[in-house]
Image (cartoon, rainbow, N blue to C red):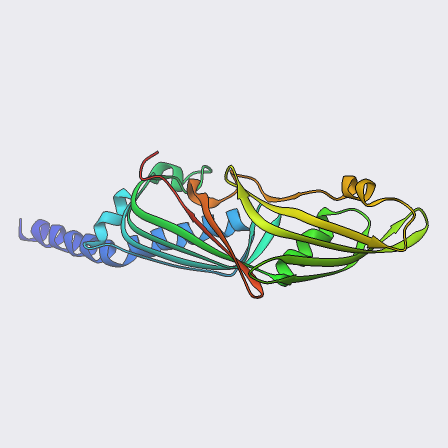
Length: 231
């Protein structure tokens, strides 16, 4: 009888220790892995916390913080992506399956991303055919893009102005001015070749979040996203 009680006592102690150490580690590690997969980056730091920590076993996270560097969202890499959550309820079966991270409810869940000039230069270089030597300058009023493009055997000098903007939850480079030099075709025709460029579709943000605000600053664009409180 005494031996049986001793074994039960040891099991109880192991359970308590596991809930305080193993569960937070397992939840934190799994969320980190899923976020890294979603954003195509290995540079991820995640911290989750709940009191008592056993709440993590049912997907209840009182405080969630994550920072991702060079995270891919749609077509563009973001220099930094910061995730903050409060009283987040996760779908645990989905978390430990191929479905990834699914949020059932959250009192607060926000995402802040930074697209710098190099990030934007890289995606424009990939997204627009036949341009090279792309340079990007971002300030509060405009995004200025200069490049070269070989058109009908001539190397044309291209200059575009635009804005980074949100439309129906998607992220775009919206072209507002286009000029070219050393080319025989007109600006209108060249505009048909370039046009507005989608950087990220509406469904590419993690955790079902939607872009709420886009702010241009000197040298970078700050993107803020959030989600509805419930699914």
